[in-house]
Image 1 (tube, rainbow, N blue to C red):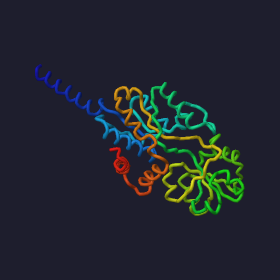
Image 2: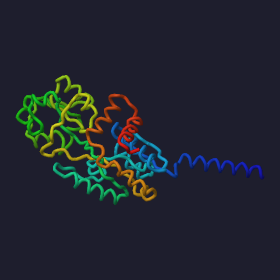
Image 3: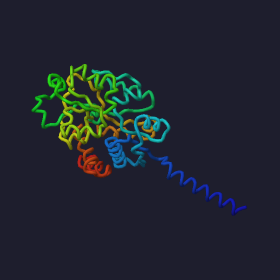
Length: 296
């Protein structure tokens, strides 16, 4: 009987030990969406937390989109991830995105309404990963343009291209820019976004739709035209964290706000480029950024 009791006690001790190690009861889990920029920012925050606190960090990067990350936070599978104001406003809070809504207004609504749902959105880091209209830098002088409105008198001789989803957007998609800016392109082609840069590089397209932080903007030497009539809403990026986690680890707040206004579009473009084009590891790029800028 004593032998059986001893065996049971040993088994219970092993289960408890393994449970403590696997569950990370004394730590947090950082998640991310499934594209380079978001994975990279997730890693940056994971390393920053590890360097600045004693909180153990587990990574669940490359999870999926907002529709995956938010439920994961609600179920306690992750504690934080990097989100964008426009996405939070539209997809999480279900507000209709309209041109002209100010970035401050969107941020304030996001912070207030997300907090009511148990999440804290921190101050944006500076980048704005919204849609943008771009042309080859070599052709900027040829066209004599710096803003989208200046394309109108030239558009009938230009070929335009964008990803399929851009044409389905109501206010900030193809119909929106055409009506707002009075554009009348010679051709308008839908294609996979991965092919757009090659098409504009070979001259098959003249004007394409990009995201403002794309690494390929640097690779293909593209210039973004000013959205001077405000068609594209802001998609400023910031950490999104569970209130419950912040209550448990109040020291996290200062860490998550420490990169406010520290990563603009040029900076994240360069970091994305190092991963996507130079094939450097996310871990190395994140560590180098934090080290070189004195964060760790």
